[in-house]
Image (tube, rainbow, N blue to C red):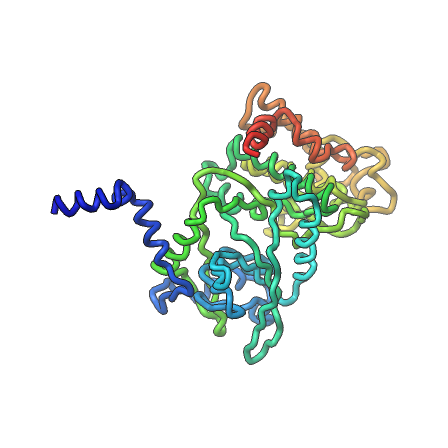
Amino acid sequence: MTSILEWLKRLFGKRLFNLEWLRSLFRRSLKFPVSFPKAGWAVIPADEKVEEEQMPGFYEQNYFLPVTMGEILLSRYQAVGKLGWGTTSTVWLVRDLEMNDYKALKLFALDVFAAEESAFYDQTKQGNQQHPGANRVRAKIGDVMIPRKDWMYYDDHLALVQTPLGESLQDLQIRSAGERLDKLSIQSTIYQMLLALDYLHTECHLIHGDIKGDNIFQEIGDKTRLDRYVQAEMENPSPRKFADDYPIYRSRPLEPASELGILQLGDFGASAQGDQPRNGRILQPGLYRSPEVVLKKEWNYPVDVWNLAAWAWCAFEGSPLFQCTDTSENKRSYSVSLHLAQFTGLLGPPPPDLIEPDTISAEYFDKDGNWVAKDREVKVTSFEELEKHLEGEDKEMFLDLMRGMITWRPEDRKTPKELIKHPWLQAMDTCFSQAN
């Protein structure tokens, strides 16, 4: 036995006893298309609504594309894992059998403006690809139409073909201590998202309009994570249920990265052209909505700067900068009066030029910007009082950064290009400049 081991050592060297090398041999044994188990998964209870099944009208409209694990779409893309879902789509990890690599397929529901989002992705490729923010914006490889042919529906579903990305910052935040991002993580994120916004605004003339943790993704880095993901699905199949023959899977997240690396801003479903101002259209998640949107005034690129700051504050502090949800009378709904009162409590009265007669602003402020709404009290606070995790000069610099992004007037906000050079982000600027 000893002689055999010595012979193996001489033949293979130390690699024989390297666990990762042995795993790599196993990974190379995956032959696509792979065969997935026909049983052995946990069954989700029939009365428990999960993922896309929670959407209003799911059963009546049946507008999501049914996908079965292991199914080969368009004779090319084998579905090997459900990565996630949203109000307008499901996202699947697929194996491209022609190119022999992995892709992500974002499969749109039928009643959404999928073609518009696809066009926005096309627009993101029209900018200068040497811009440092170009690789911080998620790209589209292409799009395909996937037919749906069952007894009632014969529509085609649009799908975006994209490079798979890792976990979102929302997922990272949830599994972090205190469900908040640490200082280095938020510095890196703000810096990289400012690069992305500078690229979108100056090169592509696009407003993102929906900046939040679950639209910011980490690059995969180690591609072997994808093989391990497929192997995990084969060994421990995802929980699922069948609703009127529609298979509903619980999403399986990719294994977390060991450290925060390159980030990409994705999901352009709420985006808008930035070459003309507009008003009236509701934009951004309520929690991160800017004053000009709330007041239904003209808005443009600066809405993204406010959005990024409001989200980053919440992710770092672990609590929102502004409350906007009315929980009275056992209901939860977005409240304009609460949101505006919160703005006023932190920023002071709005400049008089933001107040116009016969508009929504006149319902809450007089012509001088004083609060007049009777149903809500303004509680005065400050950035210093609300910030809980920094001290000294570090805190002063962070709050100075926030003050350059959180302002009543959109024209008073600094641009992404200006903010990238802020002192609180200079360590990131040096780090990423050296990496490039």
